[in-house]
Length: 167
Image (cartoon, rainbow, N blue to C red; front, side):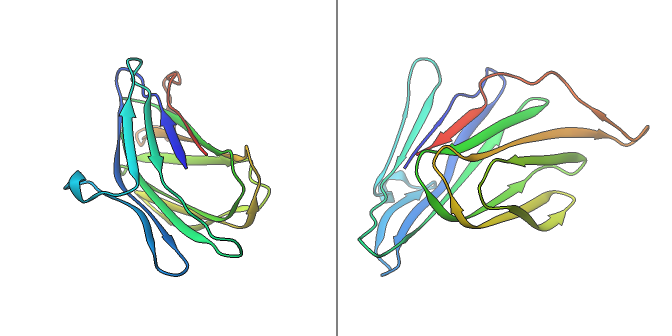
């Protein structure tokens, strides 16, 4: 599985945790943010254009499955518009977004399975898609600051370079 991202000049992204565990309990890959020496099966590189590539080793045996979990921390200046798409078929997916209070989070899905909101709080949204997700499907999301005084959204122009893809 490969995740690529290219944050703009006023934003950053870092890998907090990643793991791949087979249904047999075998840990194929694991990323330890506190001590990268304890990480296995994870490769992170950044090229001269600030494009960061994270490779997570995923091994799935015939007639078996693996659970892959990736946690990214993104820091943006102003309006957020980003996306995540897959090049491989996936069964079941979960999206959890944490953000500061006073912001509005919106997600747009192109999954073949419905993306259902499972939890909503002032600073968090959780969604699941049960069933198959086909290659090249994914989601995009926006995060904008709410203007409490006059109940409108304060929206800045969308920055370029916040795209993520997974395969």
